[in-house]
Image 1 (cartoon, one colour):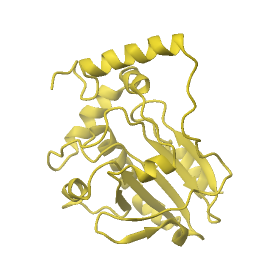
Image 2 (cartoon, one colour):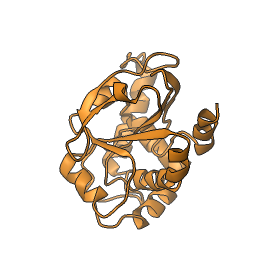
Image 3 (tube, one colour):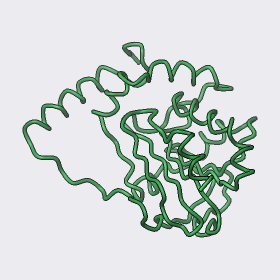
Image 4 (cartoon, helix red, strand yellow):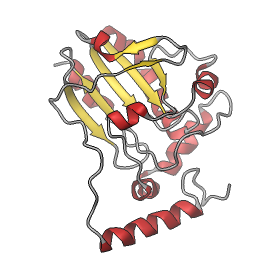
Length: 212
């Protein structure tokens, strides 16, 4: 694949972003899926984790939860963020935080990613995009293109070095991640929709939530 020094910004993506910008000037914006906003109840779901175990969000009532939507298991920027969370895993566990990580990838790809790693989080493959739709996770050529101005090249380089093996990217090029902090009552306390690839909820905001 030809790139401009960035694993996300391809010629086709550049053209897409230009067309999106021109269209935005000519037509009013369309209404997309309704975003999740505090303090609404977190949309309920039942699914399977990477090992086939049932995951029901309602089972986590009484606990604080970070529900984080990544792009795909082969995304180096996502890998960088995952390692940032893993660095905090022991502290999260002490403070009673459950991390649920959702990926666009298939279970097979997810198993390749998790093999040989100790990841104490709930890892969910969602190749059918059911949870992405439920939480109104966005795909945006404009925001994907804007990522180049927000350090995506450097993040991708650092994240790539952290892979144990090469993982194929099996998601959408324009998916933008999001994070949700859910309190003990199942209410969304914080909803963070990324403005570009790699824009996740800052760790200090997560810690502030845990210290409430």
